[in-house]
Image (tube, rainbow, N blue to C red; front, side):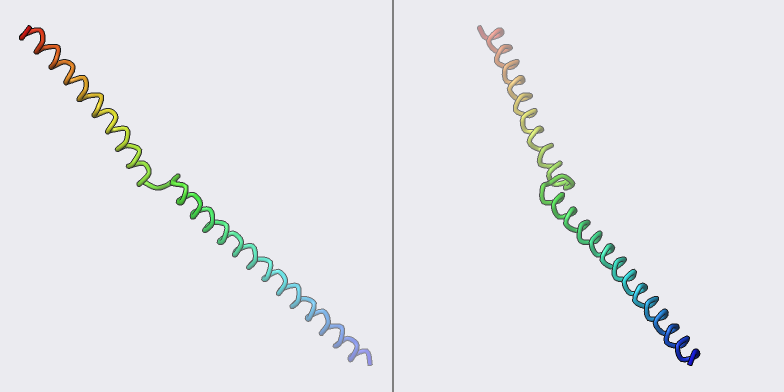
Length: 89
C-alpha cells in the first residue's frame, strides 16, 4: 500500500510541477506580449505626433528657409533702392 501512496504522491508532485511550469510560461508570455504591444503603441504615438519623422524636420527647415529668403530679398531690394536713389537723385 505504501507504494501506491508513494506513486500517488509522486503523481501529485509532478502535476504540481507541471502546473507551476505552465503558470510561469504563461506569465512570461504575458510580459513579452505586453512589452511588444507597449512598444508598438509608443512608436505609433511618437510618429503620429511628428517627433521622429524627418518629414517634420524638413517642413520646419523649409519654413525657416522661406523666412530667411524673404528677409534676404528685402535687404537686397532695399540696398538697390538706396543705391538708385543716390545715383539717380
